[in-house]
Amino acid sequence: MNPHAFADSERAAVYRAIGERRDMRRFVPDSVVSEEVLTRLLQAAHAAPSVGLMQPWRFLRITDNMLRRKIRDIVDEERCRTAEALGERSDEFLQLKVEGVLDCAELLVVALGDDRDRHIFGRRTMPRMDLASVSCAIQNMWLAARAEGLGMGWVSLFDPEVLSDLLDLPPGAEPVAVLCLGPVPDFPDRPALEIDDWAHGRPISEFVTENRWS
Image (tube, rainbow, N blue to C red; front, side, top):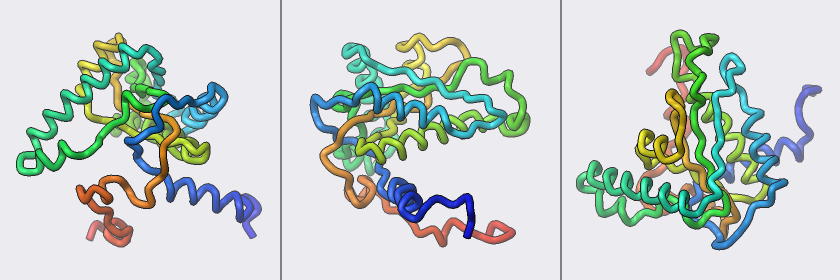
């Protein structure tokens, strides 16, 4: 027996959170997330691994309703541009619900810090490891949110420069995610894009090889 392994019930809870995590777009109107729970979720994000312990993540909590609406406008503008770029699938795309910016209890913008270029350890040949580290922080928060019974959605439909200007990000910082967080009506048993017949997940066997890419 591995002395470092979790107990069976604890291990099952971890895998359950992973399996039931969903990218959520629909939220319960006029709901709230307590400060205590939000603090736990941010701590979970902050506990993520980061290359060279650089901790490149920055979290901006959006509490101004006017600002929230402006962020929604930025997202909707990119949504329309994405639809144009999709060509024959444009109309199909526009039927999808792709964000819950105005509906969620909490709105967070996650950005890469402005001082990350000084971090060389692990980034000399792979500078994008800062983004990988931020992604780990977001995933930590996502799984913790599911364990708390909350939904979260990662919105990437925005122009980074426009959002940076709106939020007064310093030179060198870069927004990478708009996170919608809060209570949801339910957790679907499949990804929303599968339910909407936009795309379908493929089996793990298609993604694992041995020794060579083959």
